[in-house]
Image 1 (cartoon, rainbow, N blue to C red):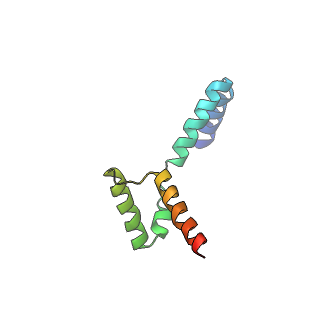
Image 2 (cartoon, one colour; image 1 turned 30 degrees about the horizontal axis):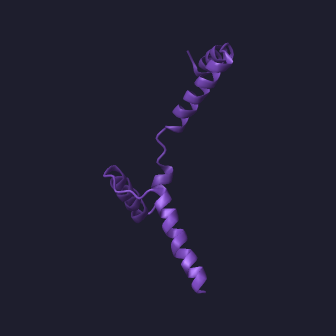
Image 3 (tube, rainbow, N blue to C red; image 1 turned 90 degrees about the horizontal axis):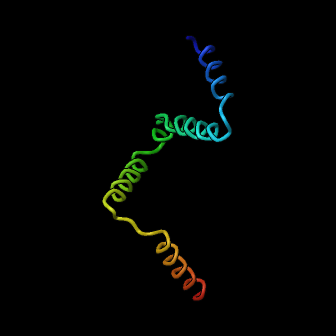
Length: 86
């Protein structure tokens, strides 16, 4: 089967799906398309940017994280104090 025939066959199968199944298939297709190995953005980063990301992933895997709420609270406390002093 060539690519044109594959597309037609896929269209026919998708066209015959119920609304619920169509939504599931749509999600799966999007997940598949978005998961393709695309290294273009990674390659555009500098070596130090790549290393910083790898370090962050490593810290995350080790559980060395600060909850979002804590970061926001500390930032608000710090910058509210600075505004009051100005």
